[in-house]
Image (cartoon, rainbow, N blue to C red):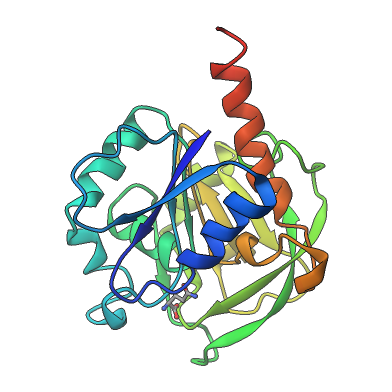
Length: 228
Ligand SMILES: NC(=O)CC[C@H](N)C(=O)O
């Protein structure tokens, strides 16, 4: 499976994402600059965290104007897995690929620590290697991770099982309904504030994020390779 890691001016988790895929997962991966006009060579798109364009205007707002984003939309329409982590999640909401918005953390402070996450839906292409309701420890590092949407949207997310990760125990940022990660209606676009790519090896303090990447590969192999 071949992944693209998008790179915007100000991305800073692109290297972590690349390392997770290449060295821990053992799959193909390439960096893709933000003005790339063709993502058709890639099977999965990873939108990493960071401070794209210095978080000016709104986190992710300027990155959403990049050429590559029309290709990300095409990939999403084609059913390819698209994963946005942290600033990547913010970019995907700005792009309208995911509903809602990420507001400033309730305490108005940047937070950087490990949190407990509940796998609220393990029946997705991103979470099939976790148990339902499994609690995993994954780092967060954000100033604007307070998920918000209107009541009607929240009901849709709940009714369609689109809430994939919730904060378990402490809700660090004030997110509505403890939401830490959601998928689109089709289930192939995931946005999440915590960083699974920083939890891929015991050497760096934990490996509970690795199953997310393994889930993507497993699903892709089942739908692509087995048919050959
Ligand atoms: N680590 C990140 O991706 C941070 C995202 C964004 N800059 C924020 O602070 O909310």
